[in-house]
Image (cartoon, rainbow over all chains, first blue to last red; front, top):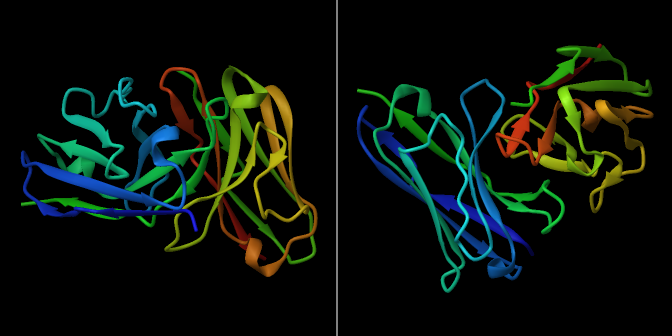
Length: 120
Length: 109
């Protein structure tokens, strides 16, 4: 069974940092691009960042550029999101998602998400 | 930057009726780069349609996607009780790399 399991969320003060992890199973992780997508409470979906299969290409949304860093460890089947200088606007449920294929940008598989709350 | 606008914001229908959801892009989107998702409360989004018209694995054939250029449509031919949810369209490839619409809530009338 294809599965993505996120962890690392929690309560953090404004200006703080947090690192999210997403462990993949049931597919060849190293062959697929991955992304982080977030959803603020009661709001819609916002793509945050992505990484290609090899880890060398890492685009970001403007809202997080310079503060967040995406990375992956293909030997551990794990995707990461290092989040620095967090603000209240970063409060959201963070999902990791598997890209459908090299040519299709849809997100075929999603994790259940990990909640990040930025508050003093 | 491509902006996706979904309409209506809320659609109230009864089981058995046909639902038509719209997604309009601020500039032309490749048909191969348009997807639709369903999200139920407390759940992660679920891929329904990719490439504007291809159903994802396990998606019932009452769901269909169509459109090209700037106008795309998700149609649910006969609503089942489990279809009442929020639906999002998504484009891939233009800056920003991924964009989602704001969502259409499909509620029971």
